[in-house]
Length: 210
Image (cartoon, rainbow, N blue to C red; front, top):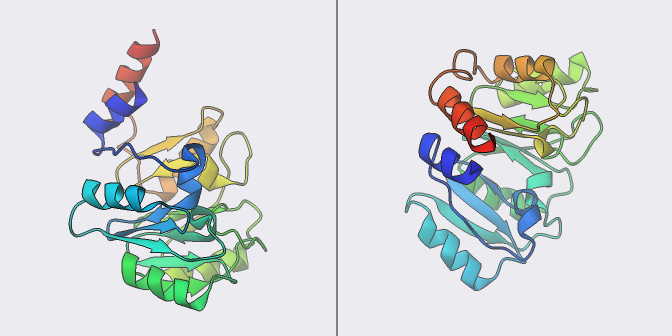
């Protein structure tokens, strides 16, 4: 039911296959300009992805040792922060395919920046132990407002419990009202969650579970 409601009310969704479907969000990274997939992606999967996306969206298979791209890269449509040990050639391809400026860094001493940070074009949520100085430096580097926070009742792995774009957000069922308020604020979703289309989605999901 979630698929049909989200597909109708938010954005078109694509059903795709992978060798490990349950972990595919951790293995890929995309924005509105491009899609990066790991070297384990088959030729058939690559063709399917390319044919399923608009022509303007570049699709690239990366020969990168750190193949969990969703954990090692965090980005929006303009900038990307990547794992400090990401291969130089990979970083250049990230810049080219996603059309972003690439920076290397860590978040709260964590190299898996894609796990501990979520970005949109409006702002970003980072690991709760990120210091004020780190927040200021990252915010200046990425040219985005950032805040430290959690999902799912205190989990620091914010990307594992939150999917968000410039219009709406989905978070884990355990996420508290306080955590949701932080998410709505930093991603500038006030007035959008609880309004169309988010409220319509909420009503449809509740009805389907009734």
